[in-house]
Image (tube, rainbow, N blue to C red; front, side, top):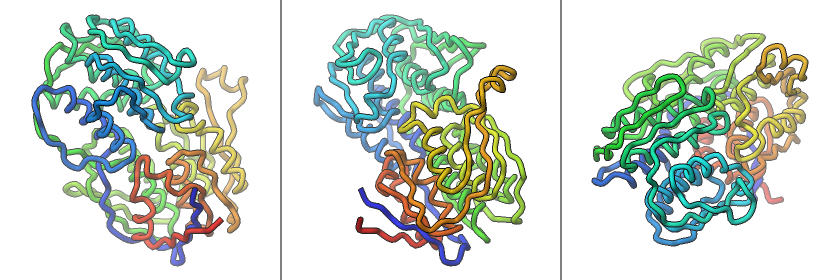
Length: 418
């Protein structure tokens, strides 16, 4: 693993960045393409490791498939192999094999899929046997991962009678489900969503060429740079204000930290209009969990007190992100704490409080925990003082060009021999 030292001599961020396609949208489009009876082209696919892994696995004829660290790929491939009757031993990395898959397996089994756990009940690896799925109605817990719901929705057109998904509660990360449904509509599959019930018609996808909008989760780190720089003027190509992605909410969040977004045709220009920031920022990240780390770092750099909620899915990401944030922020003198039970009981919502201003320390080394978002979220703090980040290549999972793009914005990236 390579450690890098990041610094920014001028603390002025200016430049134009061409972002690759959204990883979330790319993975959905590829799955639809694999399930569609006709051929169509997909433009601006993500160059992320996750998407490249999915492309490889969908094209493979091997009976043993490994998704690596990619949770999205694992969940989509589980449903895909089940509905296509593909006999597969599906495994992942050590971390992937510790992330729960039981709720999706239970749902697929209820539809008629034949899936067995190879090792630990409820977790990968899985042995998927060839058996036609005949069911059309499933009940699903909605508080674990929206990707379980999306995986089922995507395969619904291949079921003779379509699919009725009954959610047991309000879903986490709802915008990701809405993204899935809007994409399915583009490819000719309609739905209804009334209360906690989603119904998909049993109708084949219609082949239509598709353009993938660029990745708003990746853009969030460029917004963080704009906020923490002394001056900033960054144009990001590939983004619109009519995005499918819930993480586009970052453009509105950042107005609290002096950042203005000016949209034009498939691009946005972000500028720092002032150095002011709010003294207190509260947000429910239930619909945008992937940008919680970004906002945490912006708050730390600006000395803004932060109150987070909606972080329940962070524990089952590439690492337990709440624990990782607490440990790494502590190195900067910033506290990130889970609010006590007596506070939670009053609101029935779990809150996390962040207090303090990041104290510059050139010797600070950030551990990434094999989590791409830890590396990318902490990097903008190097605008305050140089810092070190371990395992720089972890960003390949979602944003392979991240360090190159930072250099375009004036950062110095030095590889350390350790």
